[in-house]
Length: 130
Ligand SMILES: Cc1cc2nc3c(=O)[nH]c(=O)nc-3n(C[C@H](O)[C@H](O)[C@H](O)COP(=O)(O)O)c2cc1C
Image (cartoon, rainbow, N blue to C red; front, side, top):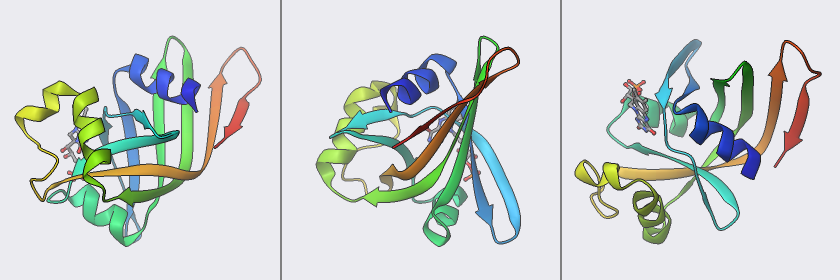
């Protein structure tokens, strides 16, 4: 899981896919933070992406870096504790312009039942679960 978090951070951005009914939706994301041994992402409840995650928490992430790519399939679980939100905001000070831990909008999710696959054109895929 640490390797997954490091890859996502080093890639700078990753792409988060959700299901909107039968329509796939994908957008750039950047937050990736380990808290209490779990990999968290952050969003805002006002966003469509949040509504899609609540309706169907199965997601997939893709990132590309230095010729390697990573796909992570899993289920997002909301952690509604203020300390989880604050830990994320502490890790991403730039988010504090837009979000605070008790603004009623900020939310954080951790990945559960995740399968991460590291791939490249030159090596066999490596699969990690967490
Ligand atoms: C590099 C980059 C990183 C981003 N990271 C996040 C993020 O971690 N969380 C988030 O909610 N939005 C993030 N955004 C903004 C979302 O991509 C944007 O709000 C998007 O429209 C949300 O998807 P939706 O329109 O389906 O709700 C990021 C945008 C960029 C360009």
